[in-house]
Image (tube, rainbow, N blue to C red; front, side, top):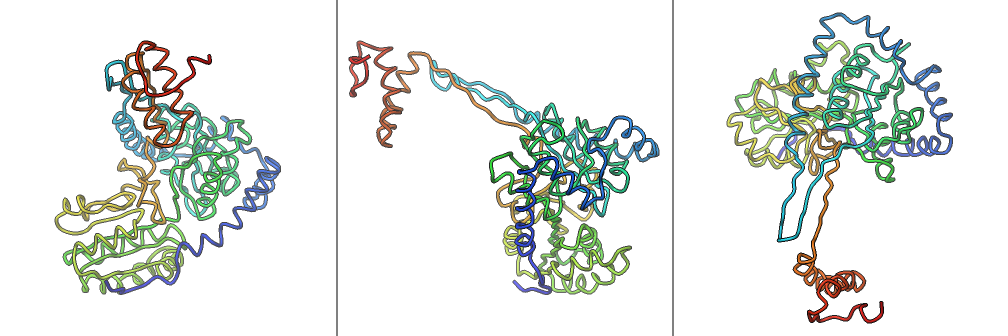
Length: 435
């Protein structure tokens, strides 16, 4: 493995800087509640109005959209929602009789409240609104709160339309750490979120992680900043690779973009093209900074080594521009979402192809997939044993309890065996002579 270009910075270094700030802000909001949120909104967004978007204001700002814009948002919604419904249908309630008299079952229950964060700083993240809220609604969540930072006098009109179309029950014009805490604590709505989801900058991601670690709520994944990687062989087009890397590096100043290849010629050509394509970008400082600080090109000896390197990086987005796509699909293990072949750019999935674009970063793809309908569902189980079943299961359970040294557990099994089968002989002493 050889670095043709190595990153000058790491995402973890940024996280360390962010954590202390997030910790202090969350402590202030926990202590002072809505007053602290109002102060933060005024400080960071210049916002002093109501946070909950009214029906009247929603109608007014969305009326500025053209029918073509609404139709395009509807297309994205239809693709994402239909895929989420298919995911929901892949998981079913069921019941089995594992032994005579032993009834075991599974129930799928949606979360009661979901909190969806939609970024809104540099860009209007219309599709993030669809990805989070529509997926929660496909899962059956009855109350969905959405927060997005205001851009001037309101949140972006297209984002507002996407949230309304996707079924958000409460839309808050609010961003940053305070939005994440607001949804977690149920401020302004009275409905604390069971689960927080959505991408964001390093502060938003750290706030989600801290609130989840406190046990206050669950989160989808550690999502942000954006990462992208491309695996390319000798036949891949260097211009396509460079254009796609720059397309994702524009997310922010700290968005890693990586190329893994077994072709020195491709590696060197992409390295040559990157500054040219960056300089043609409308805001070259953003992808330029990301590429300088976080971009990498790694040259490998074989397909197997490429897989190993990619799985170690566990990228959020992974494109494969190489031959034998089915081999890569079978052998790659750790990624947020996979884009196979030159025709499948990450931008398709980011916007409207149908899979979710809220995906794991910082190697979380080693243990988690991206946001999906199942994240909003609780898989609960139940059981019912009749007396005869208690005889077959109870004696074994009792002995296992004692193997573990848990005498109280064992006696709860023993009690039923002697109560239900008083004429049987058992190799234990229980409560029957004392109760």
